[in-house]
Length: 421
Ligand code: LLP
Image 1 (cartoon, rainbow, N blue to C red):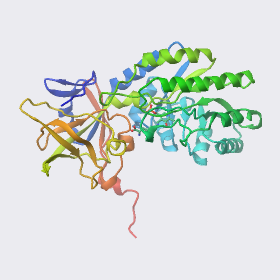
Image 2 (image 1 turned 135 degrees about the vertical axis):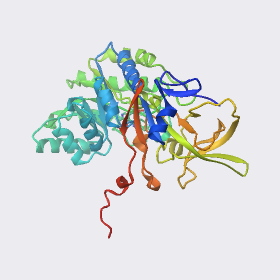
Image 3 (image 1 turned 45 degrees about the horizontal axis):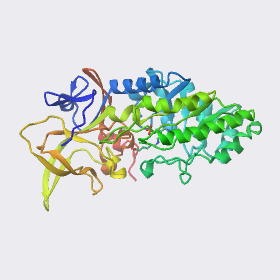
Image 4 (image 1 turned 90 degrees about the vertical axis):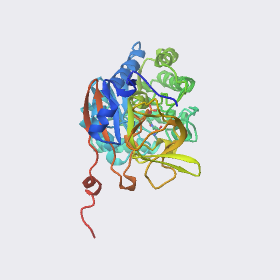
């Protein structure tokens, strides 16, 4: 069987460690299922990204939809990161985590009037508009508040990001952004929109992109728009490249962030404006694992199943994107043979699996498995399906840990249904 190891999650004497803490000891204290994150991973990745673009004026806005735990957001905020939020809830989370509104940007293809109002009231650095109707709403709401909203237009550059169709967003057929012609038409209306100041162009072409070319293609298209607008006297302050930089889950060959920078810098250097990035997964995916306990082993019609105490409600990615996550014992034992098994949860659906036909060493009831690369879009997409409580979250910092979200109690499951009728 294959293992996933890194500087942040690695085996010492056959025991999996997160930084300097034994995962077994940790999970025996806090119980399973448990999301465990490495603070050093978050820190190193942020610094790597930031450093790669040091030659230009840039800013990173952590896309907190990938991991919106308050302490995780705060970790990035403390490093100087801004935050990209996609809803009122994420905006409130970012503020609660200590982010300055001037370091916040708001995305979303369907923002409600309440969300727009809150963003304007809080003086966010920028709101991304995704349609002509939304522009007029933002202008109207800003007028009613007697304010000027800083707005970027999300442009759909019609570029194929070559990723899973559910997370590809920059093709003409996708619901996101406006096409370049509409964008130019809207930017040219700047003088009529008294309560909006257009500050930039934004894009986000998809997620888990493992090739640099789609970013280069899109950046070329959008930088041309910026230069064209400038020649017409409409000067924008920033180009927002969105997120999308892929991570290694299995054996995909992703690119190095320095090569990404090297390919993009010449394009950015031609424009005289700041560049924004909104990485989510890159900063978090391989900084987290989901630890789960083996409940049962069984063999049905010659097929092996390992049934664990975590389920699709805790980590949805395998079920909805057929996403691959390495799964490995947290204690390696030499006397175990390898088997091929489906690793599944207790939820009442055949779609509730973490891996199918996976080669894995035999494990016994009560032993723990680590589902790797679970730091992004893990807990944020978790639900209470089957009235299951969502997992605890732990942040490890060298040989210390903090519970950054406790396991839900059953009271939590009922608290918003106070009365029986
Ligand atoms: N900015 C915008 C406007 C976005 O929509 C997203 C992600 C990001 C930034 C961050 O993208 P990243 O750097 O993480 O690729 N649930 C899926 C991923 C959905 C991504 C949605 N938008 C998954 O588990 O793979």
